[in-house]
Length: 235
Image (cartoon, rainbow, N blue to C red; front, side, top):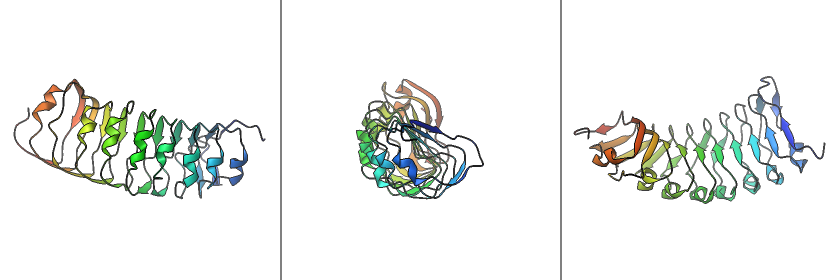
């Protein structure tokens, strides 16, 4: 089926075994959706040969591998969903080469290392979910300068340091940084540009007062600062 453009085998539950390497020999493939099965083994190393691929979804399987280096060759990729697998290793440093990407969902894996600064080069990226992994280090300040990034979920990792001020006056409306090891004072930088449907900073090591400027935010729908070491008055 050399001209196959879409392959969807979703939620069959009983499909098992590895993802066949021969899939990468389908040059016209645009959609590969294998969500909700029991696939195991590796993501094909030469997945980057599928230059027309726009959707890669292998969420909710048992895939155990690193993210192949060639993945960043998928210059047409718009939707990447690798959630709830057993993927390990670090994110490719050149992840930012996926310039067409709008959603990157990689939660519930064993991904470690740091968050690549190159992600900020993905102009179209609106949804980034790296929660429930083993990421460490600091959040790149450049993520707060992304034009359309609306959802940033980094909860339940090993991230530390201080939260970049840029995140609090950005396009991000859903920010979840709970269950990490962030510390220090909460930055007093909120203002009219701060608009959050969800702002969750719970289960960290913040101390000191709740910033007075929080009341100057345009909107905060859900705020969770629990399980820290905050003190003083609520503004």
